[in-house]
Amino acid sequence: MIIRIMEAICAALDAEFGEECPSYIEETEQGLAGPCFFVQCLRTSSELIAGGRHQRRDRFCVRYYPPPGSVNRECCLAAERLNDCLECITVEGLIRGSQMYGEIAGGVLNYFVNYEYIVQKQEEVEAMDQMASYCAVKGGD
Image 1 (cartoon, rainbow, N blue to C red):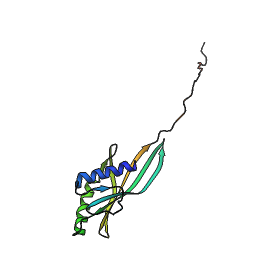
Image 2 (cartoon, one colour):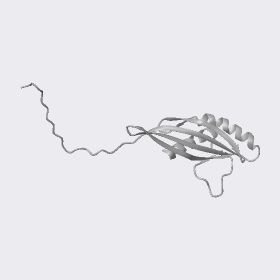
Image 3 (cartoon, rainbow, N blue to C red):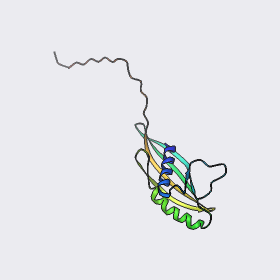
Image 4 (cartoon, rainbow, N blue to C red):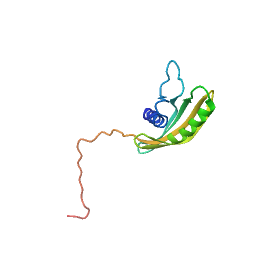
C-alpha cells in the first residue's frame, strides 16, 4: 500500500505541476536537478483495531528541488500548491492528508504529510469437511 500511496502522490504532483517538474520515488546516481520532486516514506506504523482491521499511519516527505535562482520564492510558491494538491489523494478511494507542513533547508523544500487508512486483513480459516447436528424440543413428542 505504501508504494501505491507514493505513486498517488506522484500522480497528484504531475497533475498540479505538469511534466516540466517531474517526480521520483527513487534517487538517481547523478542526483536530482531542479525543478523536480522526490517522494519518500519516512515512517509507517500499524495498530490492530479489532476483527482483523489495522489502522495504518504513514508519514511522507516530498522534497522539492527548485530551479537555480530565486530558491526561497520558488519553495514558498511550491509549498502553497502542495497544500492543495496533497490534501486528498486517490488510492482505492480518497485518502486525506493530515499534519501537513513544509520546511526550507539547504535550498530544498521538505514538505511533510501523513496519510491514515484502515486495512482489513483476511485470515484464512480451514473449513470443516462435515458437520452433524441434532435438535430436540424439550417436552415435545
